[in-house]
Length: 444
Ligand code: GDP
Image (cartoon, rainbow, N blue to C red; front, side, top):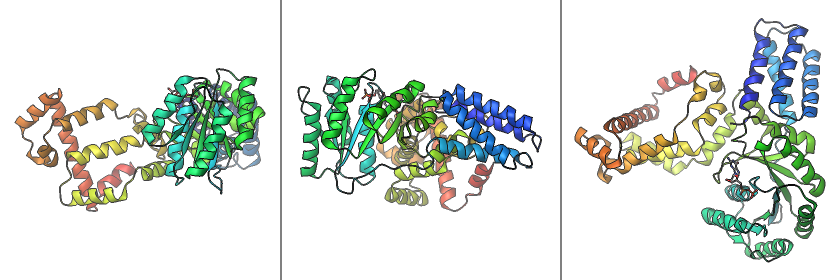
């Protein structure tokens, strides 16, 4: 998970100062040393680290941290503000053209996640109210790239424009934009070619596409896992193309986070999105302040709420609420609920976003095992439709048959039914306003 090490080290560095009330200049110096090491270990560019530490230090000395009775809180505030500033301060939204189509050109090295991000972005703009995004296959050198984009297009039910591998990428881009104008596609996303390394031939081709279609956005995808290389790549693409923003991919697999912390101050271009997984909805809008909060263990409720809203279907929720009230909440609904929680991300990620929870020892390790989900579904599928809709009729002998039907043990089936009953009970209490137990749980 992103920033894991940095998060731990920064929090421990800061918590040291809070221990004995007031702090001395020597304590502050020691903390700055720890912060510096934490950032360097997270693979943040050394120039960026130097400037950052100096700014935090100057502010801490200039404010009343040394006099304060709660120095840790003040230091957290300063580090939080400086981390936010380091990642760009304000969130910079996607620049939609007033006159559609909005043309987005995706660039980046091979393997950075460009083609996947084209799909994720199309999904995002469509959910953001911009209709019929057109995906454009302008990477003619890697034959599989066109197939890959077509598969993504099919999955999302969006049109893909392609002219095969013999056409010129500049012509492809131009014709795609013309077609989008005719057909009312509100956004055009061009998947351009990549190379293993930055090279002049590639840059020349990308400049020609830029010249030909005048994109509103040139978004660079960089792979977070490549650390400082990602920063160098960003600098090279920016020098050649004057990009408008960056998408940092694979942040889910990067425990250090150095690229995310360095790119803005090295290129002066905003990070607009982060890729958080391989699925087509694993794209997060980037908010510097929220990311900083997460790094410092202060949670990120806004993103959590937005994720929940994204997957929240109001009509369905009302139906479920009625089902709970008239006691007809069944196994089909249970599986649907599990799926929708799973869609929000791993439990580990969700815990990180809730203020305070990530600091509770042991909770960090919690995770729903994907295999558990598969097991629950297999058990439900092994029931007859009548049983699924009537949870209370399932006797011991039926449980045995269900277990045999899906290759699980009787204990697995018993556990799953117990879990179902507990969920049903909890939901019924909550819907009846008896949420005291729940509140007590949350306050702990
Ligand atoms: P391209 O060569 O730049 O077009 O890269 P692809 O889109 O083909 O992606 C390369 C690999 O990275 C694929 O296996 C993707 O599934 C994977 N990938 C892309 N974005 C992410 C991400 O945000 N997280 C993870 N874990 N994998 C990603």
